[in-house]
Amino acid sequence: SLSLTHAHLFVPSTPCTPQPGDVVFRSQPHAFALLSGLNADHCECCFSSGPVKRCAACGWVAYCGKGCQLKAWKNHHKWECKALKSHAAGVPGGVVDCAILAARTLLTMQRAGPDASVTKEIRGMVYDDAIVKDQRPCARFVCLLLRDYTLPLNPSEEELCRLLAAFQANNFAIADDLLVARGAGVYPAGALLNHSCLGNCVMQYEHGQVQVVRCIQPVAQGEELCHSYVDQASTRTDRLAKLQLQYGFVCTCERCGADGGSLLDRCLEGWRRPGAAPDPELFKDGEFLPPLSLVDWESQLASDEPSPEQKKQRMRDLDLGESIFQTFLPFVPMLPFQKHSQRKKKKK
Image (cartoon, rainbow, N blue to C red; front, side, top):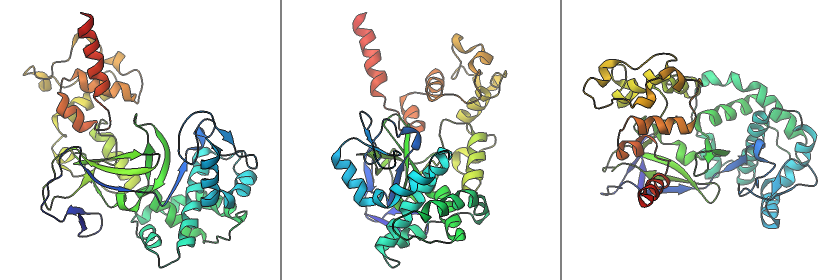
């Protein structure tokens, strides 16, 4: 059982202590959209990959079977098909994806009515007023798209800008088990959770788009539920910059608030600066001594943005231990690595 004490705060309301792995709650999206770059081999209804057939009318979306096609047609596609055929071609994929999600959200609100809880939850999503003006180019394309909707939707440009600003601050990337984004969704319940770079829960997705909030640390009665809005394996500098740009706040969590950041962050910062070795002071006790394979720091920094595999390797090479590894990369399953090591032992 959860209680909302003020905006952006969920706390357990009963004497319970959720443990790592426990599911706090699940929620369905009020609207969702598949990334347009995946249309060729993913179903836009269930997000499954494999053989798909494109919509014969618009040629923009595709489905894995008749069931998903009918479900999507009844839910949203019969109103957007003509519009996508007329306007989506030649427009950057990110703009189209955002416009489709905005149109489907407006459709959900119109069908539910102004007094419905769904509508109130969407309108209640908070955002920074400073980012509203940045949404105008996309808002204008949404207006263009809505002109050919077979169901009349006539929001003003200002209303669309505010909706898109709320999207930027509250929407979620719907990721698969490998943390690869497949789409985006509107989850007002999940958006109530605050940020911490040392969050006690994470967001996962089941059955395509069902959002699951799962604990990664014990949560005491009255403790706030938090998750990280950004990649926890990125540096303190990168995290602070992204949070300021996208969400409009400066993170002061336990991990970021320390002078220069935590020991882990100082190690990551050393890794991040091209051509620079980490501060020798970090390794004086031998606890974080880098292996010989990492002596050539410059070759380890060939790319400006490390790949997910490089980030995972970075954590393993620092020998932080499985518990810390799971804390900072909670989505990455340990099982494949364990199986790999077991196979090696059996061969020996």
